[in-house]
Length: 123
Image 1 (cartoon, rainbow, N blue to C red):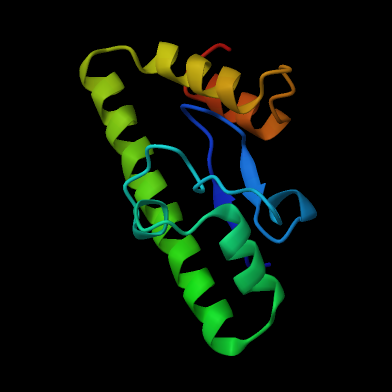
Image 2: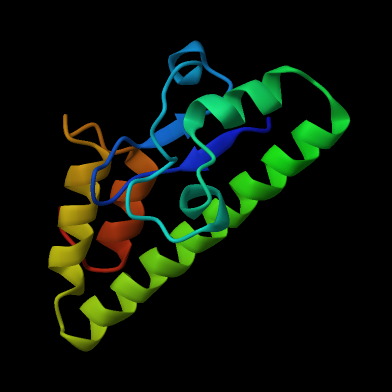
């Protein structure tokens, strides 16, 4: 499904579904402070929502491209922060903090708990 983007981390909101009605009038960028082409060039959640919902090939193609660029930028930033945490020997703390932001109510999926336990990280 197109229109799903990553926005967790600082200012966490988890996974954002740009096709949802909640984005229809949301004038914020995908993620505040993100340096991707979508966020920097004023493509708001509402604008991307409209592009994805109108089903015009050119608009959908551009929206999907912008969402992909955002997701890649997000993953690069996340990887950078993970690398820094490893170098500083703070990876376990980083993982806990990241999961607390992503799952503030504590409902961390079992697969994530199992993977971290296998890596020796207790959450």
